[in-house]
Length: 583
Ligand code: FDA
Image 1 (cartoon, rainbow, N blue to C red):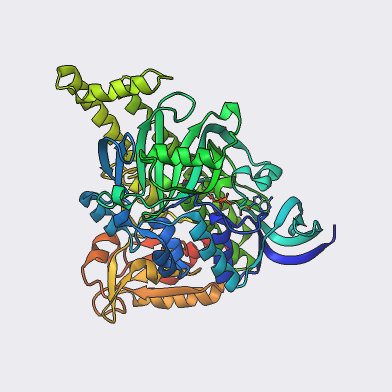
Image 2: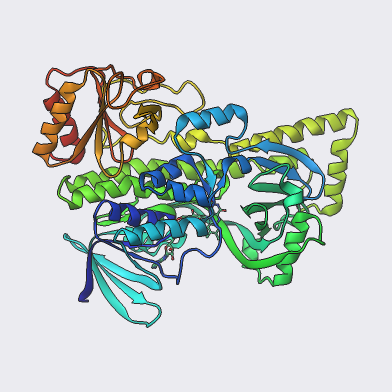
């Protein structure tokens, strides 16, 4: 095969993972080609929760404004109602996505960004436009067929699906961002553990003005205990907001063992009406699709010059909204490393840290989503409903919940407890924000790992211990509010120091010049370029005014010095050299 196209990085897939990788690499000045086997971006809403760490990547790309303009904001996402239908009897509510005042404070303190609802068919064009306008060559209707790799690069055989023509693309690295049926992961032989096709879901995308049912209880998901959902009798159907309050996805179950159902538009209208609980509401069905819940993660995510990101290496249920966010963050972890290796600023060994850092995250999020799935069946156990029961049994169970008897009280207590427990399907701020790493791209400072004072799945834990994410605090520059995150990122290492950090600034300049690696230096504190107006940086940085934090382009603390060093140049040089594999 004689390749006709050459590039530095070939990205297979233009979903959240691939489009983020393309946008990042182009922003970093790295040539790349990105393939999407379909004619356009996702044509259905698919993933939608965009959490703070996801938005932070988009902020670093300069896209947060566009995201905010196009997303449904947090305050319209949080009222999750459990009911018999949208018009039917309410069974309880949860305040999700950190809209409860207690969690709202935690949420706002952790990041300059806010969780939002950004459906995938709206997110993807933002990323693809950014990638294309910054230099990515985006090829729709182009499918990867096979690839081979050697010591110097990867040769891929691709097919133009419009013309049928096949041609070769030669790249130095290949990113497999080709989703849950990844050809790249399969051909690279990446081992997967877990099960595919565990539960079937039917997504009915439809237009209907449901304002009168929801504007007093605004949320992005409404959960209905109904007969006939799924293959096991009663289940939970979901109405998911796509655009408030006129566009929706109705989610209904099907038995995966019976194969994909073939559904007509009338079926779609019927499902929508059953979820709404009012068949007089005008409904216009836009699309009907099916998808299966998986519970799979890879135990390796790279093979030589082929590296997989996103659903290619972790597949799980939508619970906790971790799918596209984790995919975006995989690419955020990988792309600065690839850029530095390709520019000759780091040894190829730096790429191994992608494996060490993201494999544990993949496993953690798949297991979290699985445990969250397990929180729904107790609702039916609390209703005392046997498996495969039908509509009459459900009616009786719901009536029993209202009875003013001791048995009714017990049922109410069990039901409310089961319902409240499902908060872990939505409010796992720690799972989202506490991902931390141990790898060759992190230099330990010898301090012992501090146990988090509160449940690390639920609560954000701010720490600058190397391997942790830089904490966010608001600083002031020229009377403008600036996040610590805004001082860092954009593909570069940053050294943060304090009032007494002049020696670190000089050291960084010398080390950067000697290693040929740009390092920006920012000083924070009284009289510095960034004022620590509220004292929050002093409270959270865990280093003195003459200490320093070395922050990676992906906002992770790579190394720190609690106080001044005898020889700051030697200390910084050793740390950066170790991270980049230059020693
Ligand atoms: P993604 O699947 O988004 O993208 C893969 C890309 O690779 C596509 O551009 C595709 O065209 C391309 N591709 C594949 N094979 C190729 C080949 N051989 N050659 C070239 N291109 C190729 N999650 C969630 O949190 N909430 C939800 O409600 C849903 N709903 C949902 C519905 C449906 C129908 C699906 C399929 C998935 C979801 N998800 C979801 C999951 C969520 O969409 C998923 O986690 C992210 O899209 C993963 O992003 P990736 O970029 O990794 O893969």
